[in-house]
Figure (cartoon, rainbow, N blue to C red):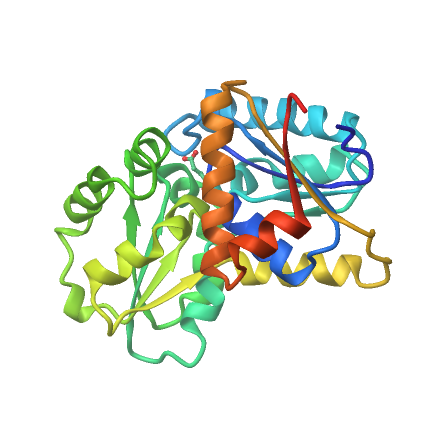
Length: 274
Ligand code: DGL
């Protein structure tokens, strides 16, 4: 299956499927190729240098396959490599960042918790974001080492994910928190678990909308292809991993209001061997 002229999307694993699902809802008739770097996941607990090197390899592979726009559906990869990628390739690049700006808007005197990978929170990009938007807001940081691994290995629905989340959130008083920024696309896949744990009074904010807006703006002049086509790939080349990706993508589309019948009829999902 050729990827030529597709919208290329990548993440270290499953997380970016939440971004892909949002894109399909907004722009159903297009061709998408999704690359999960499962074999090298997680990125968020590795060194900047290792992640940068790997991300550039992935981008090279995607660009060589002929994609027309690149969506980095990963906050960690964006923090580390977006600027370098933009200098290296000549197609549009859209990245992601923890949605601090929408979290502080109209939110005077409230407490915001930003959950992201340790690497995202350590990076200069996030420090600059904080300097720019924090103002007098109370912003607490929640690095979540180990959470992506549990989601990748056990699946977003697993009980082990609830246990991991509980232990990460334990040091915080949830009653004092008003907004939670989901600063990693993997965390968006488990937003209902965050909500349940933090309580209904906490407003969850993710960066998917901002990314989606940028992609839509870049593509607004383009005509849409006749059919919806999605190709799923993983650096693990494991058929089980790719079947799991397909299952999670369908789950995410159903969560956004698509029916199973509609998906089967109108969204052609291929895996890399097909
Ligand atoms: N999903 C990615 C993000 O948004 C990173 C996960 C990882 O640690 O690999 O940051």
